[in-house]
Image 1 (cartoon, rainbow, N blue to C red):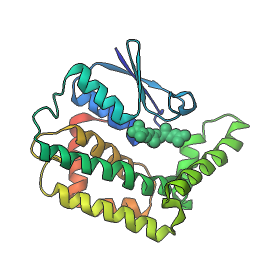
Image 2: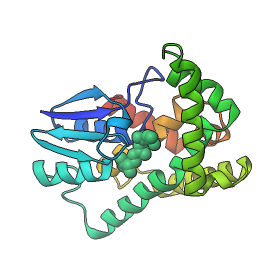
Image 3: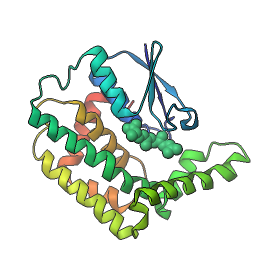
Length: 232
Ligand SMILES: N[C@@H](CCC(=O)N[C@@H](CS)C(=O)NCC(=O)O)C(=O)O
């Protein structure tokens, strides 16, 4: 049995980590039996979630996990894709994971409007004195990550403009297709759905969420994926 170690749900309805949700959605899409287990990133093999265990094998990082699953259990979702579709999927995935992710993170942890929701949602259930200390430490940690990645060096309007530009590009790339690469769902849709859900669903009201809500095909795509695959 594959065990997916991931963040506990905090916004009630979905996994707050788009990388964890991506793997959970992929496992459902590929029809692979699995178990979900709440985990602590400090205990993860590479200090971040998700990771999986499969028999004696441990694999960390959502990209490495999907590669491992394809190599071990076959590739029911992407097996028929040609080189151009694979390249398109790769570019779309990177746009979500390596660019849009940082604007989302900024909105959640640094923007005071987002933090007012994220702080209590993530840490409100911690017992005293942890609930007095951990939120500040976690926010500092995120600010540091954003600073070293580079996004955190920009003013808020620039960060949100960049995230909105990513969303606008994704909306054009999706067009009127039901899924990122056409009529059938493929592995990049696990990423697309996980990231859009994490922007659209949590009650973190930022310019990024408002921009996503204004892009009708992205909202419809999210709703289509949610209806098909639920929220692991
Ligand atoms: N490249 C990694 C990114 C994973 C990642 O950034 N996970 C975040 C949650 S969304 C995490 O565990 N953060 C904990 C930390 O930075 O301490 C993947 O694809 O799995």
